[in-house]
Image (cartoon, rainbow over all chains, first blue to last red; front, top):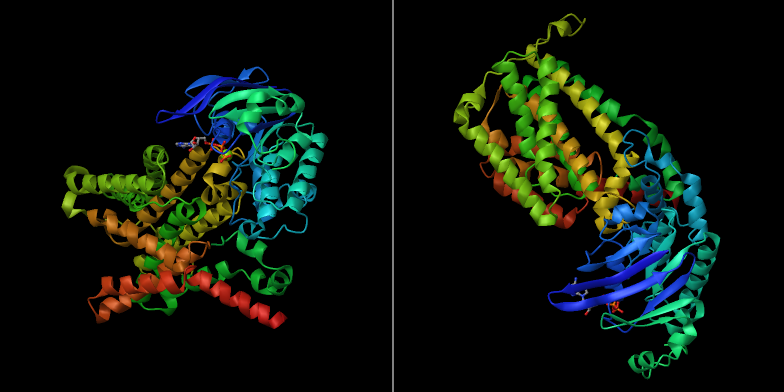
Length: 249
Length: 341
Ligand SMILES: Nc1ncnc2c1ncn2[C@@H]1O[C@H](COP(=O)(O)OP(=O)(O)OP(=O)(O)O)[C@@H](O)[C@H]1O
Ligand SMILES: [Mg+2]
């Protein structure tokens, strides 16, 4: 269970995230939505240790993880993907995922064996499950945009996380790619019993898969609840006026 | 930029297979065996040149562990070369410690210095990292230049003795070589072993983690890499091997002087790495060979070596961004592709 309480962050006096409290239950699929600049990415960066909060705490299964560095959080079972695709562009697809296995399983200090021979089966299995089988030898930076997003998901999964934070997993994708990615995410969350927390601008996606939705507006949490509650919340309607909540973008 | 480790994996399977017999030849071993014959088949000058190249090759490969593998641009790598040279030189000359102890001590001393200076350097990023490495190298230079009692100051430490090589004279065939040549063979063997260790390291899981840091430190942290700790580890390893190169260089030059540690030497070794191709393990040694050979040839004809160096760099940056080895690899792939078609 992920518990965020009273998290705040200012940039030079500007309150990007203000006193946000939010709980995500184990195996729940939760979404954070809000207009551009609402503070969604900042909130994610606070949870995952990229930014230090000014105040507030983050707890994972009761344990205080506020401000812990990313490499520690990764070991504690938090995986994430980024709004702007974030992979190892000069390594092959195989090497990308294999590196994640090597690190997660504590082989990074081995300086004497040949890297190539480690975790070949695990890497191949994960490649197949994220739909990149056959692309092992492609240089990651030359993959299509959609494939890079898939690879990034694979990087997060290689560390065997309990909870995945995905910042706009379908940003920039075509309708078809978005559909495939969402199906993939649902399947993987099911198979691996994952907790998911994601941000997304596509309301069809959000209301289609989220069990819980939190709405940020100017850094503040203005609503939180099951999709129907949020859809009918007057303040949310006001913020999203004219955007037709729940009927596509 | 492709790296040495990614290059084979990136080649289409057919190409890799066709190239297999070429790859299976132990080229490295052959190169070292050929180099080992220089004292017999070449002149004294050839041996001198070969030794200079071999030492610079190790120095450049050690830098490339930071530059090409970890993505850390150090402007002060000569500091570690210098510390190695001074520690070994001072121990052998002032305290008459035998080479077999002085040489490892030089590596240890350099490693400690790299650990302390690196601890601070890896806390900074990019240009700030580069500037701090430069600052440390200037401090080493200043100490070397001013600490008369220990380093000999501006006079340096001339007449560093050769190691005791009597054991080598006992080996049939090596007995009638000059001490200079015997030391050349010893240095060559040490350099070969060092390069073999570094080669192995680059292709190990540890080396793979370093390439993730080079490619994307932010993402590396989020697959669980303690980025600073790995950068520091790479820094210490690179410094230690630079120290070994420096220790050999002091004996080879028959003295250790403050201008060994002058900052322009850091630029020179960086040019070697880039000239040869920092995306390839054997790039920097090729760069070292070409640069040492050129500087010898050109200074014999003209005084405009810096001008030539600038021109070489310009051509390189625009015409051969992957360095000499990168260019050759691209050419080789094209020939292979055409043969297949
Ligand atoms: N490092 C930073 N320094 C200064 N201001 C920042 C920084 N990061 C974010 N901000 C500001 O904080 C606010 C929230 O940004 P954030 O990226 O969290 O929004 P978001 O909800 O993710 O928006 P989007 O939907 O466009 O991705 C924005 O006004 C942004 O300009
Ligand atoms: Mg965002």
